[in-house]
Length: 222
Ligand SMILES: [Ca+2]
Image 1 (cartoon, rainbow, N blue to C red):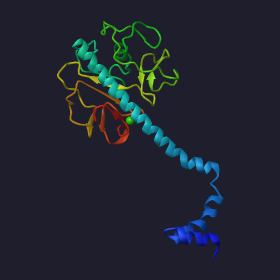
Image 2: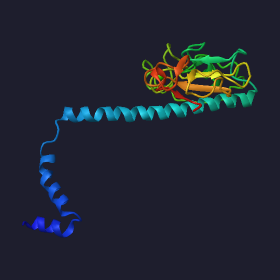
Image 3: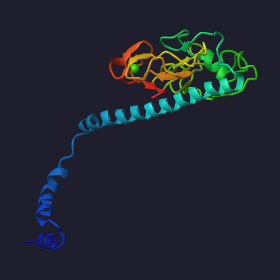
Image 4: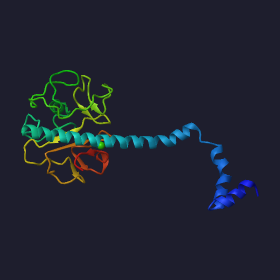
């Protein structure tokens, strides 16, 4: 018996396990996986963590958007709409992009910088929300678009416009964008918002919130 074996017998709670691991140890560390194999194993885990972080970011943004619209209502006694119909901004709505809403909520003073126009309904030009500009205007994510093609649009972390639905007819209800597993329809709310998620599909007009293109959507109300 070597001195090391004697030490393990004296000091380990289970000397057999200690001895077995000791014997395996050189084989485990002796031939590390080749780098491409290691990257192949770690990359999916990294992507999953990254997507989880983006979902958290989207949820926070949605909360801020809903709070901003409600703050506008508190300030002006009406929603930032130029119509008296229930209105959806973004994919599946009219308009299909959201810059007209955020021009009002950001209190834009003119067609300058990332503002496409001056606010007209927000007559006192109060700032209700102030997201950052996107880092890449040609491939916009996580902020306000700055290029001519997307100026003033508020993008989610995957590159789609956030979708916002507002109770423009003031019946304290909005239609639920999903037919199942996303709460009642209509929803007893004045404003809701959603992100299309990593697939950039789903949202308004989807069936089951837990299935297909809708499963990765991030919603403000649940
Ligand atoms: Ca989706």
